[in-house]
Image 1 (cartoon, rainbow, N blue to C red):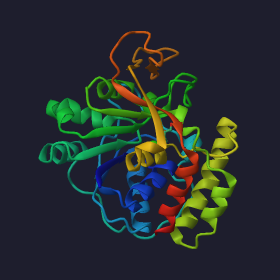
Image 2 (cartoon, rainbow, N blue to C red; image 1 turned 180 degrees about the horizontal axis):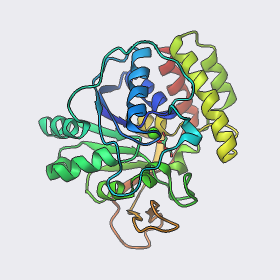
Image 3 (cartoon, protein in one colour; image 1 turned 90 degrees about the vertical axis):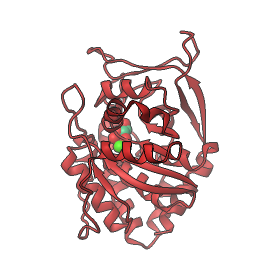
Length: 307
Ligand code: RIB
Ligand code: CA
């Protein structure tokens, strides 16, 4: 049983990551922390509360940072819409967010039980970076960070940079340089997780409000990806990070040194991954390379069947 804290900027794929993390028996979802990213914090927080309410996921939710550390805020309405979750409609909230700030919660929870908690940020790394800055001992108390972000290949928000890193490059630099045990699930991996039509039809056949919500989210998210990126199907990025936390054999990784470009220019926010070990710098991350799709899709669909 791996105990995890999910850090989200709930948008479509964050919502699906929450559903997988809460449903799989080999994970204990201890809490969800929220940050600005796909949309402003007010909306990513409301979306997170709404998803947990609909799916009756009763875990504490903590609001975090509303702005990046240094840069101007960027959001992703082209993909996630004005609400951050398209046009989905939700029931009354099951619970309200906690009073404690997400950064303070992450520090308190990890220092209380050193080595016990895995942090799974699938959003800009502002909450984690603030926690590392506020409490330098944190890096020695976290079991592992499994993050969705970055790419050794092409970016998706700029040609060079992936959104979660581009939205707060200074925060990402702090996390990658912290020395914490780190796995990077980047676009090179998550673009292998574009939802096949037969998987979407299998989800559609599940008669439950949660599964039908996922169908609705995939239609909305799929159309956005078709228009913006010309993709035939939407990649469920954030679900891949949770899947790796469940079963590391699902994803092949390669140790690499990863540096984050924080100078402004064409490559601002790029994860510069030393794939061939050219720099001689010691690896600071395990970087995801290939996905076992044959086992990944049943893992996701079976989790949806459990609601
Ligand atoms: O680039 C993909 C990432 O950006 C995902 O986490 C998605 O939810 C957005 O936050
Ligand atoms: Ca996300």
